[in-house]
Length: 292
Figure 1 (spheres, rainbow, N blue to C red):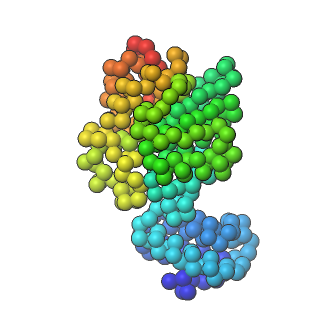
Figure 2 (spheres, rainbow, N blue to C red):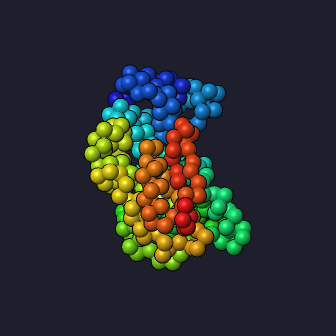
Figure 3 (cartoon, rainbow, N blue to C red):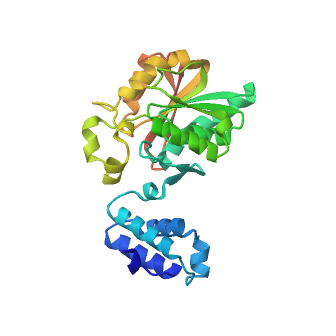
């Protein structure tokens, strides 16, 4: 396939876009641009200003292979190996979810409290359960210079990715990766406990979009029979790791607000905030200790 692609940047972009569109991909223009720019080391400005710029044969071959993968259904950011989240470039790996824009709602929900805590105490300790790429913890560290974070994951592959991301972003001095099954190996107390846990009911995973079902790790999606198992664990065990005036913030599925609220209420927490994502869906709940 690669030998059929043009060797000039402008025509290469056009053919890439046409091939993805012909494969029925809705974001064909954006995906083509991301693939061509990444593997050719060019940017949008160069494509406009110098469309006849020569792209070397190795890059053309890499672009051809990437287009094949995309046409076979692999998500574009898996092919690139990274995704932007909260202005940060995060490397991906097979055991990490792709961080998505909806999860930025969780960062935005936590930031005012984390910033105020750091200002008042000179520090803010954050525990990120199921850290994956480290997205939530690293976004918070980038915005709150006095904060530190422990990223917990059961997957060694995910932890290695999170630690690498911390290093690449210059945040390694304030980030610790811990392999643990939820709180199993956690110690100390934290001002913020954050989690984007698996919350898809086991029986619904087969109905997810192909790109999620076939390429995101199922362990990071499967929340048990009713999708609420991880919330029960967090609500039951968090108290001994939470500072007295600390907060717990969790991402939820858009239909799970009442169930998750009830789980935490039964464990002695009151709702301290509820936040919607860009689509207006319930996305994040924040809790604090105390009766409703």
